[in-house]
Image 1 (cartoon, rainbow, N blue to C red):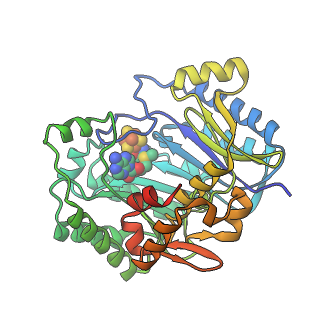
Image 2: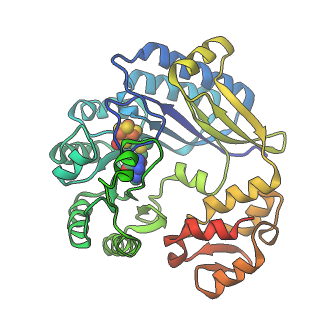
Length: 383
Ligand SMILES: C[S@@+](CC[C@H](N)C(=O)[O-])C[C@H]1O[C@@H](n2cnc3c(N)ncnc32)[C@H](O)[C@@H]1O
Ligand code: SF4
């Protein structure tokens, strides 16, 4: 039986580079829409020929800023995907959108093109914070874009960044409550991280940005879970909250370590081919990627079978982010390793005793206490 497939499509351009962001995103005076549309379509066709027909469960347009894509490109890619694959009845088609007024104006065209879920990068409802984050929109614009999206789409999510410099518990609670009052059934709430080679990293090194200390960050995280739960949004992943049934099916594919392919600059994939799981990666820089696609039909720079140890490591890193944890039987089938073969037995015992991990015959789960310190936990636990 062939595996179900999730499809990620990367649009690598933004209006401006946000000072905290290390995603594969680039600013250009003029974007050659036709060239990038053709290259994405060509790479999708090449990938489809190699994968064969599969049931397609989700498509995700991510970025960069996919709301800068011509809606006709989104439509053409979705038509292609429906031709090459077998779309599931309840296929989820998400597009990440920034809430500037120009982009909001295109939302209804995206709906006509086949998008049925949008994820809006609001980041904050506080004007001063938006400026500090280098955003190109006001809070008012963001709220208007969200209201419009909610009128057009049944499924709408938005992103906020918290644990920002100088943010205290009371002000975050107030901001989050305001956000929850206008939220639909899904939210992504990220603690600010300082990423390498960003402007924020330089400011952080100079001491011009100070992040909340560990205790404050933990208190902010707890408050976030509490406030969301109060309105029925459950934490189903470290940074993602949804009404049960409204989880992002596309992102669940990553965390459950199932098959997905990624096309576009820098996109990754994890694909079963001839019974082996392979890791694919594509050229990161947009123009060289397009040149490769024009020359070879694809921009692949890596396409490697993943060794069993690495499969187990990846499945643990992904699965322990989820509140549901890891399905042990599925883990063994997918990785060719048991949990016992993949973790340090002494560390696991200690994590269970200290309440960071729960283990049953069916599942391995990081508890809420465990998820708060997941990075440290995984570093010690995973072989
Ligand atoms: C691919 S990005 C962006 C989507 C869209 N371009 C936007 O900015 O609205 C996905 C999300 O990652 C989050 N993010 C990016 N960099 C981050 C950082 N350094 N710390 C925390 N969250 C971050 C932001 O919330 C962002 O909306
Ligand atoms: S946060 Fe979004 S808009 Fe800002 S640079 Fe990153 S991808 Fe682009």
